[in-house]
View 1 (cartoon, rainbow, N blue to C red):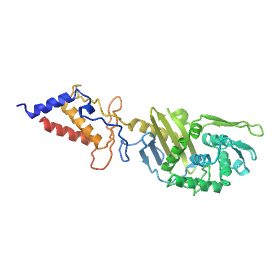
View 2 (spheres, rainbow, N blue to C red):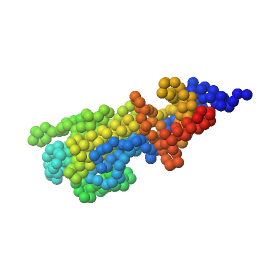
View 3 (tube, rainbow, N blue to C red):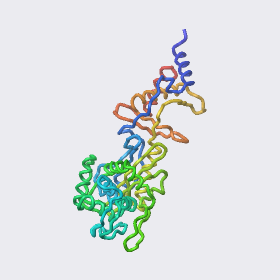
View 4 (cartoon, rainbow, N blue to C red):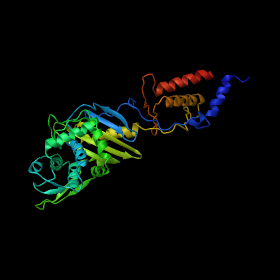
Length: 367
């Protein structure tokens, strides 16, 4: 009779000649990410409140103080655009009031009494962050700034935003005007779901109707991420002394769309620096392995170790059925990054590998 130990060893040696998943008689579809998975420490950023999100997988990759209300500065204009979009046609003419023309800070140079197509005002407030354009749109849609603010808050309620309250359409500081990184992310997602608005926020520059006095108007985008980050597609910057630097960002690479919101960043271009760090973290660390197959494991000299291979295949199968996401190893060398889903009794990748290796070593008697 052949000893059981030799049978098991022969079985595992044969197993290594086949792709891992078919050898186990299984193939796994993409494993959806879950809240609570750990990806290793996120980057250090200056923003005291932030969130990074995988829109393709509907997965909050990581966040910090994301529900804390803070001054949103000009990222407010994303909500202004969403509310106005429900009530305006892009070619509808908007008459500029004295109040809108006099609002101050970032402006496109509107003249009281002139009429501007709504589409041009959308572009000015989203690309150049023009406060006068936001005011003109708000007064036209809401009848007054207070009326439009009520519409903004009603929209926030409809969207399920829990940490936002708006009192103006431009984002200049006010004690009653606040939002959170999580809420701004929801607003950003809604804006990008509207193709016309999504096209506006990825613009590098814009033209604007010449003023009644002949002054040329227009300018470059305030969102420098569009030229500094591969795949960037928008969306909105903000700054006040109270808010600090704020940015709602988005980038596409391959078949993935990631979004990030940073609030209160510090230093020159700090919001761009922080957003880049968080997006890099998401693209590099938070990756999904669609199918577990074709795995091979070697020891130090390059030879296949059947015990190690069987152990890791066992652990892969067990982790997959437990609903744990396994990121593909980065190039050139693997990193000890673990992505794990609760409950707490589900061990992490090192514990699972260790358990499986001990189990197979004991089973074949090669301690």
